[in-house]
Length: 421
Image (cartoon, rainbow, N blue to C red; front, side):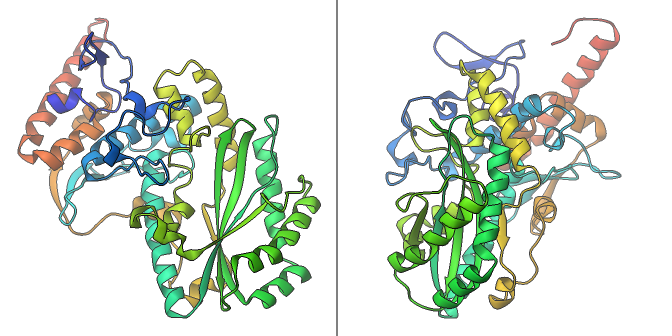
């Protein structure tokens, strides 16, 4: 039962003793995850071994040694999102309920040794669900890697365009998101946009949405990959795009961005500045789940703050609800017409298809009964079961039996009117 009362549990009954160690307890308080969940003034990565922090970006490196902790945190973040958004929100039901007429099964991937469930509902709400965000974003990242490789093979030149707008603490993020998308639409449509495409030899774009939060409030912005058939310098691309972006923002009812901050152009070779996992592709697809830079927060940092019982937890709950409302229904990536065909990438999968996608090279370790799955969900032990399936699959049956006995005891106590926690 060790796995049930350690970091593998999503929100099991834990407490911290006087020495700081976590032990089993009867209360229902959620487990602290340490400094990794804090979003206050401490530098990102503080308290972690140096090898776990990217020295270039400050990003916490979630490598093989911390993969289970990262998964446990995702379950914890979804639990917080369930509380913040309400039990009727689709994210609140993710990885909780079985698919109709299916049993839940535990599998272990043959290639990577990772355990996972099948037969469980997923919400495909990548903006609000840590589970689906991780899975969908990784699939998108792999596809962007293929897109950059295909572009290189065709002799195309890739630029990373970042478009921002002035923003203030009192701005309505939902209104700003709508106007920002309107400004981008004006940048890509009309006579001026057509002339720009012809001038630069622009063959297509991939637009990604990102939002952070800082001293000036919400900061939604765009990352855009430009696929060019001419080797323009960064300065030349900036000179061409910046006036068009400024005018588009004005027409969309936004403050006019400055030349220095409204439009930034980087080489596609920026990918080489990071480890392959955190290259240009991840910049495009994982902005909403990675941790914010010092002094700023990402939307999932709001949930981390609530999870860590931050003094401003009520504020962060409200901010996450505002963010969720503003980004509902928005696409993470938008490919311009014809680009996928040019790069021979085929039809784009939907978020729902990516969230439900599973590997075919896996071994089934357990076929769970309805009561067994209810026992796992009741104990908030979804992550713990997967940890055991990966590390000690021979002990999986014993863990499932223990959880089932606990579930039956809980039901018996309730039926007899005995107080339960």
